[in-house]
Length: 215
Image (cartoon, rainbow, N blue to C red; front, side):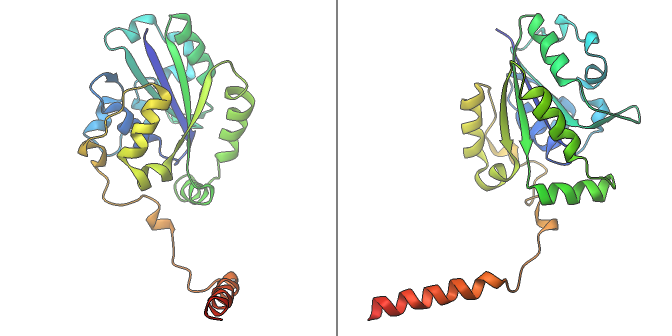
């Protein structure tokens, strides 16, 4: 049976990152341009027009390989216009062709995600995504999973091996997964904290425990 994995996330949550990672396996028909380019406009993603007009998706799209990947942020821009993608309609249409569909929502630290959106789009759009995910996708008949941005950067290939098992979807885990990655994308948003009010409480507790052990 053919299988389609749809990945989605709020703007800036790692849609391009996971699209590249999950397109690398030779058995997967994914976003080919991202394999050799750090960034490609979202409206050039293979399913881009279908998120706006799902009825344009045809069975022939799934010819060839057995595993297919589609990606869209929520909201996303197509031809200069912002849309809430019609993910559910695309999933239902693919299923009508006999394709098994799984959906995965990308999760990134909410504070960093907000800062990224404000930096790039000047607007916090995560609530738009949450409204769609909670009221449309999570209440649908499709299996919906969560992909963790931070888990990938911490555990890399070990995390991807786990995701591959959970989704029953082939995922590459070789050195190619680190292409275009020289550091965690969150670093630019993180600052060292010199002191926090809880530090003294923790240190005091440690000193007390040490004294008890000595006594």
